[in-house]
Length: 90
Image (cartoon, rainbow, N blue to C red; front, side):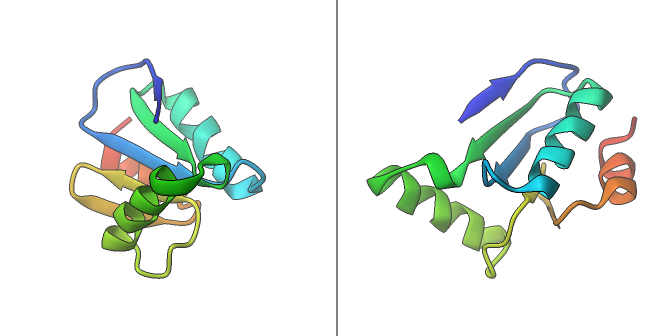
């Protein structure tokens, strides 16, 4: 997991693919909001690390689609700018 410094707005974890445009937009939005978060580019992982991460994602999003954003105990699938801003509280 990669850590991005910012304002603590709860536990925020973003699961992405390094080549996904919507994933990049979600990262950009979180960066613009200045919040602290963690992210994982799942397609760059290998072996047990990748398996474990896919298990984590399927807990929140059984379809394992990207981006999958978990904010505290809420999961947002896809690039949902309004919902992300409302959930984090800008």
